[in-house]
Amino acid sequence: MTRNVVDIAVYQSDSLAYLKSLRAHGAKSLMVKLTEGTTYLNAKASNQITRGLKIFETVGVYHYFQGRGTAEAAYFLAWVKKFGLDKSTVLAIDVEDPSLVYNPTAQVNAFLKYLIKHGYTHVIVYGPGSWFGSRIHRGVLVDKHIWPAAYQVSQPGVADANAWQYTDNWKGLHVDGSLDFDGSLSGIGTHKTNTKPKKATYLQSAKQVKARTSITRYRDKTFRKPVDKFPKGQIFDVKHVIRYGKITRLKLSNGLYITSNTNYVKRIK
Image 1 (cartoon, rainbow, N blue to C red):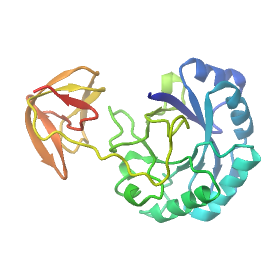
Image 2: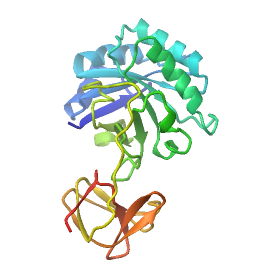
Image 3: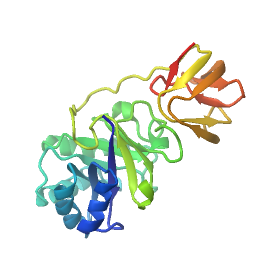
């Protein structure tokens, strides 16, 4: 079952009232920024974690990555242990800093390996959706669980994402909101290290499809020019199934484009 997860940092409150308001609006789990680099500690983390554990079903923590794999993992894990977080806790690495080398995958792996070696196997990699496949090579990550961020679109844009941060203003509360598809972000469910993601499938032929989720229509097959959004259950008439690299896109009868990913659309005819 998909779960709502919010993530907070020093910019958000650490009060019980604030955290209770997030829970009341439907957030099941909480992710707290704990550390950054090898010197920064979120000054509100202690209260946010301690109080969060009283309110949310699960609380995880994340580290903002600056490129020093093992050193940053050691710093992060030291604080994880100081706060008494056990090995069932979800630990995330936030890979988005503009100063990082173009392909930081090797250092991300060093970070993950350190955590896994010390028994913390519930790990997940966060980053901009556009980085996965270009800058972060998921295929060679030592743990394949990912949490891409992509706003103002109807889907993560990354095949088989485990979670998706889809807004930076969840419920109008000025906090990042995510959907946890399989329990990898909330820590609910089975999480196996070194598992390969399920391969996405794309329609090869179709005349009409039905939306399984909300769907965005685009002016171009690259999906860089969104036009509008339709809800789950919407029927689309397809003019052509076109090739786009190794996958396909659906060109509609009105000339706009939508995804052909079978996670998001179902062929009717």
